[in-house]
Length: 96
Ligand code: SF4
Ligand code: SF4
Image (cartoon, rainbow, N blue to C red; front, side, top):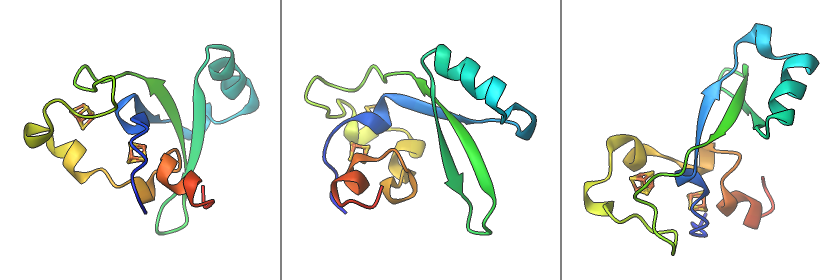
């Protein structure tokens, strides 16, 4: 899997919706507010519904590069696009 340098993983943060908030009324509310949601599966097969919150990182450059790459936070170092359904590298391969 090759990073397409789309920068999406540096533009959004995701929060897990509580089970009681995963219903048509709540999801419609989020949609109306312009927020998308994605569904993830854990290794044990559980379904997690995540809300994508637009929150562009100030370190993301216009070329979709990180201006503090050598010193980027641990969470950025551990990010694995293969586990992120919104990652463009998977869409490019037709698996997303
Ligand atoms: S979302 Fe995926 S393809 Fe896009 S920059 Fe991040 S890792 Fe690369
Ligand atoms: S610090 Fe760098 S890698 Fe981390 S979110 Fe910001 S631009 Fe992306």
